[in-house]
Image (cartoon, rainbow, N blue to C red):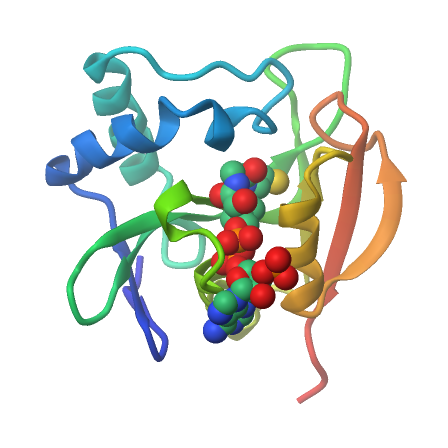
Length: 179
Ligand SMILES: CC(C)(COP(=O)(O)OP(=O)(O)OC[C@H]1O[C@@H](n2cnc3c(N)ncnc32)[C@H](O)[C@@H]1OP(=O)(O)O)[C@@H](O)C(=O)NCCC(=O)NCCS
């Protein structure tokens, strides 16, 4: 997985040194309330160790889970994801849908600065440079902050959809710009 940079940010792989940040981030209800079908705040460090290991295992040259940091200070800001999105279906684990999903989870201390938008725009650019034709984003219908990020990076709002995760989500689509 490549490290990606923007004007203000470095998006780098997660490391074992980032476990305490993962715990701080995912133990907050403000952060997890709209994540997954049964949101739950993380409670112990062992879960954070597993989460970071999972993030590290998700990498190939295109997909991955990045830790967004401030380029100058290294301050940790949040998570950016580019992953295969599971289709809705009757059997667990859900099958891949064939679509690729972009996602963002920022620490509340970092909200309101445009960091999610800046980081997500860069990941989208990376996705298209890597050959993807389409990238989707899904949000809980009540997650307006996240919907604004999707719109700000140029994704099109396609309305609500039940196609993914066995959940009703607002669906956003970005298509590869013409060369
Ligand atoms: C979704 C989430 C990342 C949005 O964070 P955010 O800080 O609102 O988003 P941005 O980083 O893009 O910041 C945009 C805000 O900063 C402001 N801003 C300040 N400087 C800015 C800049 N240089 N560029 C862009 N926006 C800037 C914008 O005006 C905007 O405010 P507004 O939304 O009130 O108009 C955040 O709420 C979050 O992590 N939530 C929890 C996890 C989650 O739900 N993830 C999504 C799951 S689908």
